[in-house]
Image 1 (spheres, rainbow, N blue to C red):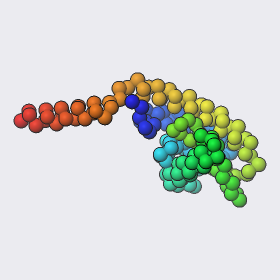
Image 2: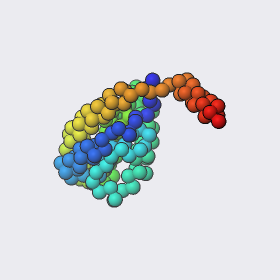
Image 3: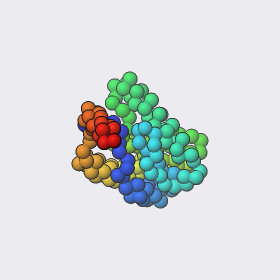
Image 4: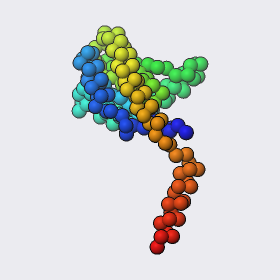
Length: 163
């Protein structure tokens, strides 16, 4: 049985933050944020204090879900990259894998080529790190709902019969 959401407890967030920090240094972006599709920030780098990363993660996850539905309407499974262009600041969002995306806030739209190139590299590195984590999580026993129910009932029985 595969979990519906990605397990984040075994992720080396320091390694992911380091990848994001390198990305910030290479692109001179304002902030880079790694988040899961549920809207939880996994790691971030850059000027996080300039942006409410918790709210941003939740809103981007919602935006990406809506965009996935638009993609289906036009015959695509999903779009792998989203770009929001403002007057001064822009957001580039790319999928890392099925569960995780990277959002980058940057200025200077003329740097979009550099952002896309470095995002692709960072997403590969992050994807590889997450694949190792997924493999570790898959080696752990996952209890299905019927098994959990049986274990829980037996535990409750043992608690009340040992008096």
